[in-house]
Image 1 (cartoon, chains in turn blue, green):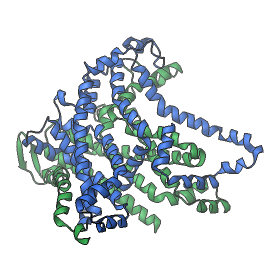
Image 2: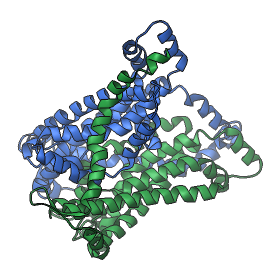
Image 3: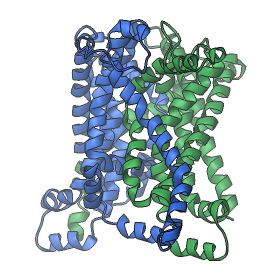
Image 4: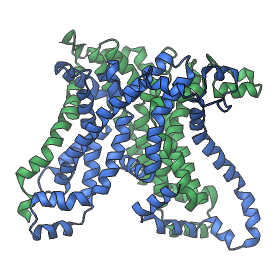
Length: 314
Length: 294
């Protein structure tokens, strides 16, 4: 977990003094000053340690079980205890899930809808955030409020009108239906967060650039955008998780099995095979879980920061 | 300089596309949905005006009330679980783990990013009874607690708790981080002063820390209750709303009404009821908070 520490240090220099402040009034720092009490304090901390162990077991064991189970042959589930290690690496489960179960195709479909939508969200919301916080015009606050309203609205309200629109435009059962919906749905939070990042740029910096003769295009592309690039990546990451995990829109607008995304595909797959074929089901679930998990492990501090920022603003 | 930042054409070019797409995909459908509540029909059969018929139907629809009660019960249970466990975890991070807490925070947070369908499948297998026992039933068999072995997802009462457990498991790490961020912001001097005055343990938490944490606790509460009132993915993927109607929330009832039975008008009315419900709950929480502060 070195990586997370490094990431935390490089991206969040601020909390460091906070920790030392906390440490000053904590019970442990006092007991450290009295060495005789150390053993007692270790004993006192034992319940907390056990609690911690239990907590980590609850969080991690299901995933380990998932991974181990995905390598078992179907017969193993009924013949041996469920928590036993797999008898061998039964890769066949993965092959079956990927090909017969179409998980490979669903994966591709998700990539082909989520990434274009992500690109569109960023292309639209970065200029919008710039316009909202850097440019000077009347009605800015109203527009910002309008975007804010969209964060709280239940998705269910959008479904029927959107379905009607797409039906008349012949977009039902096309990737466009998802790309358009994802873009519109991702905008409010992204615009809002981007506006916040632009707001954080010191005003003097922008004024200096203008005095130096920068035009609007230069000011936007050369000065402002590079300064918010860190936030841009965070926002993109947050939206990636939202869109990648979308079930409702994909379920509503796509019924053609060839176009299903990973979530609806997995739902469909487990509906068809899930009851009997446990091995391939676990393999399919693993295929859906571990890429997101990997991305999270690589960029966890950024993901955590981005997702919680979204909650506090919303 | 002022001229550059007041450039109208530039503002339209920068703001226009986002506002246009947002209006088309989000704002217009909200209004459209409101209009639908006065109509009956669907895209294939066409629509006709029915006045307040959908709202009358809403009031006398037993399935709606059942879904509403389930939604409220579920939202209150899961929100309470998420916030309380999140708070306990946050206190654990700050008071016991301190500098070592980054790793634990990261690990407890991760279920948030996992796809719901995948998590639901995992829980379905953990609580399975057929074709073979899942982890829980197998564990009970091992401990000779055969009387406890049951179809956890096959009965409304236990399915409710499995669902609640899953959503709490998924989100408690998220709320822990949220509240942790609030806890480390509390000035050390305040807590030191309370310590000097003799407050410790539970009393310190209850009388000093919680009041200071209130603003962020409220944000977390509103976020959580808004999420759980709109629960859809977890339930669809784990129980499909069953057995029977037992675990059907408003969202799923709306979805089935609209897309299985083709009743767009009534479906929109249900969606509207949900929107009004979450708005009301948010306002009530805000309102009660203001009274507490005053």
